[in-house]
Each structure stands twice: as structure tokens, then as C-alpha cells.
Image 1 (cartoon, rainbow, N blue to C red):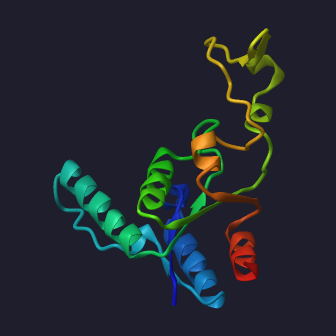
Image 2 (cartoon, helix red, strand yellow):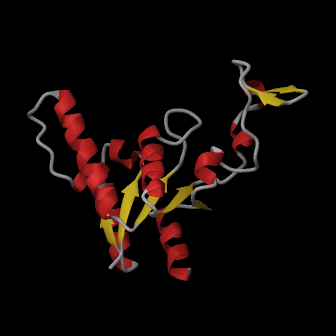
Image 3 (cartoon, rainbow, N blue to C red):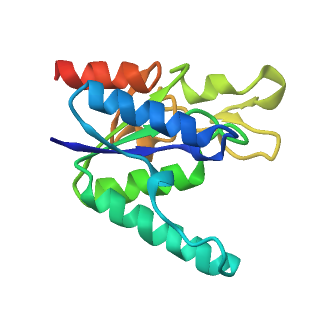
Length: 165
């Protein structure tokens, strides 16, 4: 049975344990073993940086065991995906794992900026800080978009597509 590492900012939700159980159950229903980061056992009685290191090492080990990584790439605290999730995707890709992402709304990244947040120049659009806005007809930074398949929908939508491959 192939193992799926479940990446994403869902671990920050108030009901993150229940979310993880649901996602792992969906993996089982589709014939996979789900690996959810909060299933790792970590001693939270230690100093904060030791806890952080333990979480990091446990998640790295889980990704190494996985055959596939499925990432929630929805915007998190801004216009980009969660930075930890992005790191996990890059690490998995570097290990040669299959990496997939899902987004509630798959639109060109530049379209996530409101009219008042982007300004036209002769070379393209810039943001309020004068920095160019990536415009390659992908819903997310090209380094992620070119390294994985991204679907519009949710975790189960992606599992359905995996079954059809």
C-alpha cells in the first residue's frame, strides 16, 4: 500500500486532529496509507527549540517513508501557500517523490491581487512595493507549479484524480 504524506497548514487549525483523522480516513478509503504530521509523537515538556527540532525530524522521517506528498496549497497568512508546506514539497521533490497539490480556486497567481494591489508597468505588473508579480499562467510560484500536478478542489478531489491515473 502506497503511503501519502499529508502536507499543509491544516495542522494550525483548532480542530487539526479531527481534520487529520478525516484526511487519513480518506486515504484509507482510496487504498492508501495516510501519514499526517500530527500523528508524530513529540515530547512537549522540553524547551521550545528542542520541540521544534523534534517536530522537524519527525516530519522529515515521515516524508522519507512516503511514496507521495499531497499538499494543501491554499493561501495561508497572505497570498502564498504555507512556507512549511512549500519546504516539504521541495524536499519531497528532491527525494524523487511524486508531489501533488490542491487549491480551492486554481486561478492565475496574478489574479489573486486586487486592482488596487497591482500596478501596470511596461514590463508587467508590480505590487505596492514595486516588486514584479509573477505572471506565468500558473496559480502559484513557478517552482511549485512546475514540480507537481495541481488540481482545483480539495484533498478528496486529488485522491480521485490519483485513482484515475
